[in-house]
Structures are given as structure tokens and as C-alpha cells.
Image (cartoon, rainbow, N blue to C red; front, side, top):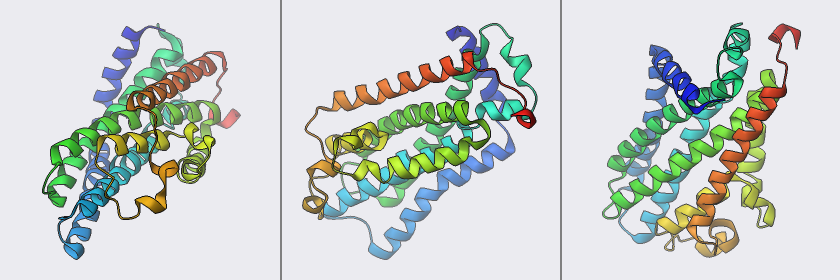
Length: 263
């Protein structure tokens, strides 16, 4: 596997996916958070107090690095191998120089890049709708970094699921996401440190002023905050990404894939 070959695959895949259908889906993703926030702002007005600013930041976090990134990666990263099997193009791609690993990494980078671009545009429009009185640039920067980390980590996770389960990848990915990322990540025990959302949430709490949340005492330190420095959470997310991608490449290299109707 060569990184140069993976870059070639990425350029080819990125140009191939610039279709009308992809553009329509991207537009829907981009406009979804601003539409939700527009309704909230119409009903409640712009956030003026520190508590309202903190709540707006938390809503933006769940809409952008979580909902938008998860929806995009579920559809773009999870089925990358199965789509080639269905199209009967995998045997031709797998024998190319660089092998299966380069193809996997190139397709992974394509899905991550599309996701990041959609999320950045969406958060820009969302902040324009919310109209925070202060801290907009800081919040945009924090969300932009969290979006990158979220896309890298969740993309690596969904690629691994796609390699392991093929036709059932989307079902397994949705089930895992709900159970681990939206249930286990809020359990005040050591196990929540194995989830991606926990580390993203802790970084948000360190980079954005969430100390004025009205329900902070009810949420508790163990649910939303961490005493560990921010670099440890970033390192954990990057470690998850590298480890999951390495496992995916190893499994794919050793697995003899067949056509979908023969699995």
C-alpha cells in the first residue's frame, strides 16, 4: 500500500462523486441545522444571556459534528467496499498497484472530505442564523476542529464496519452509533471513554464556555466535562482513527471478498 496511490484514488473518487445527486444531498445536509436553528430563534429570539449562549453552543455541537457528520459518513463511508462489490468492479480495483489498502484509504478520504466541507458550510450558515452577541469566531473555530476530528474518527469506524459486515454494514453502524455514541457515552463510568462522542464533548467543554449552562450541576462533571487536558482527548481521537484504519486495512488485505450474491 502506498500513500501516493491512495492520493490518486482520492482524486479520482472525489471527481467521480461530484454529481447532481451528491450535490442535492449535500445541500439538504447543509441547510438542515440552519433551518432547525431558525425555528428555535424565531420562537425564543436570539441568545443574549451567558446561559443561552452556552445552550446554543451545545445545540450547534450536536447538530454539526454529530448529526451532520454521522448522517454523511453513514451513507458515504460505510458502504465503500460493498458498493464496489455490487458494481462488480472490486476484482479489477483490488489487483491494481497499491492494492486494497490504497483503495480503502482513498475512498475513506473522499467520504471524510465531503463531510467536512458540508459541515463547515452548515456551521457558517447556522452561526449567521443564531447571531451570537460574542464568541462567534471562537465557536466557529472550535466546531471546525471538532468536525475534522469527528469526521476522521467516525469515518474510520464506519469503514471498519463496512469491511467486516459488507451488506449489513449500514444496519450494524446505525445500531452501534445509537447504543454506544448516544447511550453508553452518557453513562458515568469508565466505559464511556471508549466512545468518540465523549472525547468530542469534553473538547467542546474545554474550548467553549459551557460553564453557564443552567443544567450544568444536573449533568455532572462525569457526563460533560473531564479533568484531562485537551491534547489527551485529541490524541485519543487520532489514536482511534489510526487504529481503526489499520485494522480495516489488515482485515481487507486478508479477506477474500466475493460477489454479493455469493456471500
